[in-house]
Image 1 (cartoon, rainbow, N blue to C red):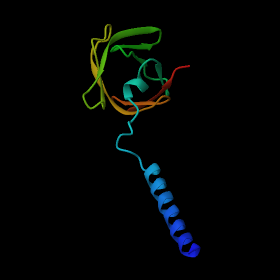
Image 2 (cartoon, rainbow, N blue to C red; image 1 turned 90 degrees about the vertical axis):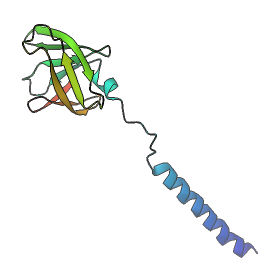
Image 3 (cartoon, rainbow, N blue to C red; image 1 turned 180 degrees about the vertical axis):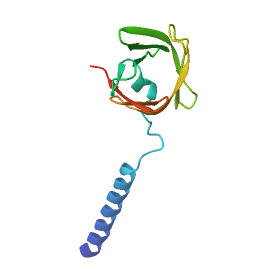
Image 4 (cartoon, one colour; image 1 turned 30 degrees about the vertical axis):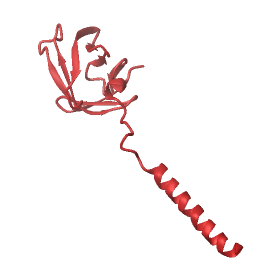
Length: 124
């Protein structure tokens, strides 16, 4: 009797382990992507090539950029799909408003496209 119970128990254990492994290793549809607003806001972003102005996106929707000792302020917001950053009402800038395509954002990297892709890192 014990010989037949052992294979059944072993098979049962392997099935439970396989189910747990599969269930725990699959990404759930409920796993949220990091919020781009949280990753983007609250820090100065410096152009890695040191050609473009440093960018600062405040959580309250205000925007700053600085270049050669001059700081300009304005407003920013995401497009509905959060793939474009819309900048407007920039005081002191002849353009006044523009948009960036958001290529990548993380806690340590920001890639925006205006004329071409520009890579930014948090400023020291």
